[in-house]
Length: 192
View (cartoon, one colour):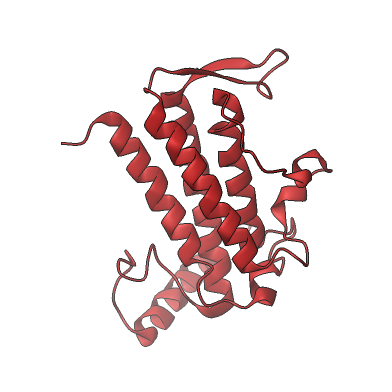
């Protein structure tokens, strides 16, 4: 039976892997194309979540990420999109290096290790590694869900992972009928 730290770390890694799968096989254009009114895009979400892990599993525990992240000092949402020189390979390489740094923090510290989140409140907030692992797992799951929808809109790729999609294994005709049935129910519902 896993101990609590190993379990939390495994869930965090699982969401990371799901997010990377959402980038596999997409073009540079599709990876960075804004697909919502707020500009959500696959590559930007990966860049953002790497930045978040660098901060929470670096700076918070006095183990700062050693490379500059100039977008963190920029304006709002600077970490939510990739510049022209930040290719998929560049962003994913940084993502992997940040995760290795974050994993080293997780491995080095006990769950009750105390860190300080300076951006939580006026004077910051003391937190444990346990709380940060829960926080990050929720953050990664939320953004992995965003990426699920964005990727499905690009090419229909859906599910958790290629080898474990966690969706009914029915064919395209079944899905077409399923969506038609949902649309029929929705259109019959009151619009107000």
